[in-house]
Structure formats: structure tokens, C-alpha cells
Image (cartoon, rainbow, N blue to C red; front, top):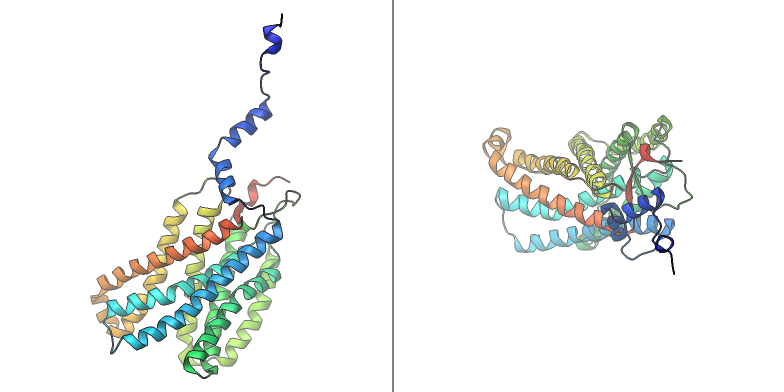
Length: 325
């Protein structure tokens, strides 16, 4: 005879119950889905995410030039405001957002600031080079002045985005991370030394900008600086909302959409003033707001694509304060 008590299933310990509860939780299922069937090593995750975003930027930069050439062939005369803004936002917002997303990914990451800046440059320079090469081939000549002015505007956007990323890390608890090894220790907080390192790069950049600066160029620099600030704030909000290790939240998306609408409103308002003058622009505020909603939708679509790249390669937003050494 077998004693029923001796053959009964032993009770689970507290640790076993905790593991069982975790494996049945939404967080575990989400982590399993985020693997995408890949067993990535840390360096593979890092390279995959950064190169994937760099390729995105190259593709949309080349498509921008191709689209401009096609539009010049098919559109004759000056289109009305709604048509013009539909075209401008459709072809220009994707590369502008991909550029800001690449900068935010590199600078909201947790590595040394020097490594972040060099990574950001490595991610954005191929797209900038592809843009210039495409224009040169389309125009059949090299426009040095356009290249210098465009590069200076993008550098202003780069600096603004980098500053927003570091400030968010300095005052907040979140940071972006590729897939890390289990033996890696907690991510260190961002300190004042990071800002000192960033200042050195800014000093070099401002020296270059001053060398090419003209009064007519001031408005473009201010525009791209503000654009970089607002777009990076939107990107970081959507990163934290979608890539966090805990359950994703919708509030970050609402914040990001608000910033995205502001980005689109900048472009629509800028062209409205150029086309209508200040007074007439306010009289056409409904058209400006309507096209800004469309621009925000284009930006959100690009967010989804860029987030998909980072998710595929195992990138997450880490709460540094919740880490255990």
C-alpha cells in the first residue's frame, strides 16, 4: 500500500510561486514577444538597432529627393496652401523625424557622452551623405552652399536633441538601453560630467556655425533648434511609453502626440506666414490646424516604424531607480 500523503504533490515554495506568477504575467508574455525569435547578444542588439535606424534615415532621405523631382515634373504653377502642405509634410517629415529619432536613440542611451555623440554622428551622417549625393545627381552639380547650410541646420537640431536627452536622464529615472548581459551591473545615473563633455562638442559645432553664419540664415537655425527640442521630447515620451520594461502606458503616447502636433504646427504656421502674412495666417487658422493634425499623423506613423526597429533588436527603456545591484 502506498501512503496517499507521501504520494501527494508537495506544496510550492514562495520562490516557486513567484516564478510561476511571473511566467503567467503580461510582462513575461511581452518579454517573450519582444525577442522575435532572436537570441541576440548585447553587441548584436546595439548594432542592429543603430544600423536599422541609420538605414531608415538613408531610405527616407533618398525618397525625399526622388519625390521632389517627381513633384516638380507633375505640378505646374503654385498650388494652394492645403495641397502644398500635404506634399511638404508627406515628403519632409519622415526624414526629419528619422533624424531626430536617431539622435535621441544615441543620446538617450546610457553610454559615455563621447560614445553617444560619435554613435549619433555615425547614425546620421550616412543619411545626410545620401541626401547630398541624391541632390547632386539630380541637379548634376554640387551645391556647396546648400550642403553647408543644411549641415549647419541639422547640427543645430542634433545639439538641441542631445540636450533634451541628457536633461531627461539627469532629472528623470528612465534611460534607453540595448539588450544587456545578465552580468552587467546597474546603469549609472547621468551626472554633471556628461554635460561638460557635451559642451566640448557644442563648442566645436558653434565655431563651425559662426564661420558660415549670416543674418538670413538665423531664422533657419532657430527653426531647427526648436524643432529638435520639441521632436526629441516627443520621441523620448513615446520611447518610455512603448519600450519600458513594465507594462506600456498610453499616457506617453498622448504626450508625444501633443509634441508632434506642435512640430507639425511649426511647419504649417511657418509656411502660412510666408504665404498669407501674419494677419492672413490667423484668418486661415482652421486650415493650419487641420494640416497640423495630418502632420502629427505622419509623425506618429514614423514613430511606429522606428519603435519597431528598436523593439525587434531588443531595446528597452530602463528605470534606473528600480535596478538592484
